[in-house]
Amino acid sequence: MKKTKILLASMAVLLLAACGTKKAVVKQRPVPDSKPSQQTTPAEKENKIHSLAVMQRIADNALYQKNLVSNLTFTLNDGRKDISVPGILRMRKDEVIRLQLLIPILRSEVGRIEFAKDYVLFIDRMHKQYVKASYDEVAFLRNNGINFYSLQSLFWNQLLIPRQQKVSEADLSQFTVDDSKAQRDGSTRISLKDGKMDYSWSVNPLNSHIVLAAITYNSNSNSASRLSWSYGDFKVFGSKQFPASQSLTINTPAIGQKPAKTLKASFELEGFSDAGDWEIATTPSDKYTKVSVEEILGKLMNF
Image (cartoon, rainbow, N blue to C red; front, side, top):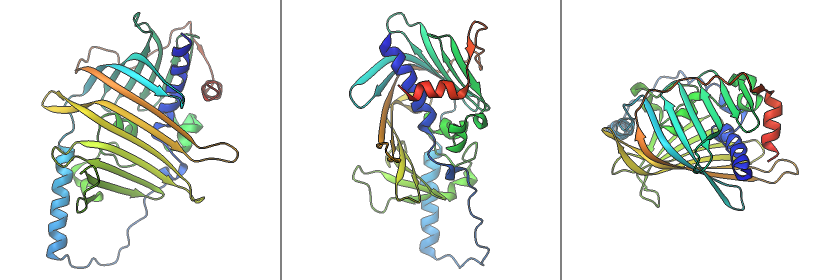
């Protein structure tokens, strides 16, 4: 039970940090220079057509299903050892991402983390406590530029553009495609820059699957925070394929006297379903005590 308690708390911290880095992410993209554009050469035109074709193949891998439900094995590495517990992942596109942690064998729920469009919910069933707040009410989320749609893109193995709900066909030209020099793993590199934020994706050129997403914040102090989210073991789900193995690593730079931190976690999914017979929103029981954001995050960060 102690192991589950530690994992529950650590998972909440990890997921709350997963999609954010620094305040710079919420800054608006600079307005392009209005100077007359130079004439496009044949080589540039051909390269543009090629890049859009690559981006279209990646976009076409998006699942058609609105719901994804899967059994889950969640593993957290705390720097000393791996801790694993079973769980359930439930996602409804553009509405909610829900992770439920269970007691092994008994499979009773001990904790729930829910990300919706307008709120974040954390339920600790062991202590009968919960927090429900908007993204703007949680300073940690607000200041780090975390929103529902960017987190959703990572969970659904899709591209993202900061502050946008989705990436449309008209947006594909914003990305830079580089397959002239293949990575050591043979992948194509897709990139997008937004202020001090660098977004990149490694793509398998054979099937256009995203195998790695990376978000890097470059601060004025010559230090960088980095989130890496990797994907593997793609399984058939309907007419598409979805990664049954996902892992993420968060590297944060040293601040003051505090050492740099590296957090690692993995999600092993089993048995995809598009079942939609589950509630969109969770309502905490009247027997549960609502606690402040500062209180619950303070407890979590001390684990």
